[in-house]
Amino acid sequence: MRAPVLALLSLLGLLAGGCDTVTLGDPPADVNACLPGQTWFVDQIWPNFLGQDYGGKHCYDSACHGAGSKTPMTLVNPVEAATFPLPDDWANNYLQAAHEMNCADVLDSALLLLPENVQVHGGGQLIMKGGPEEMLVQQWVTQP
Image (cartoon, rainbow, N blue to C red; front, side, top):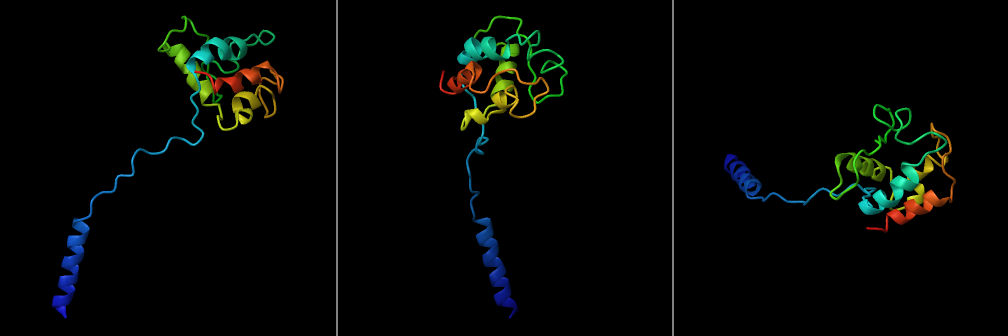
């Protein structure tokens, strides 16, 4: 009886040692990952939306989304001109805004819902639902 158990254990040991590691490939990207065009961001989104003056307030102000703010999106007023690849200040602004996007349903993006005050926004309503900023953001996901 002892011999069959040892034989079975030996067989299991050979089978376990003979298995190859299964490579599953790279982990999938975040389902909501969205990296729309940098050029459109620099040429349209920043000057016509995120960098705009809203009655003396700017999104990048320290009391809003500036350095030291406790909000999910942190922006800076770019010091240097945008070149490609983007300088650090521009790249930070781009990534911060892109992380607030939902490319599968642009109108459901925090980048729009908050300043439209559809979701409570500390700065109140800055843009109108259906307004020009909304159209720019919708176009952003299709532009290079």
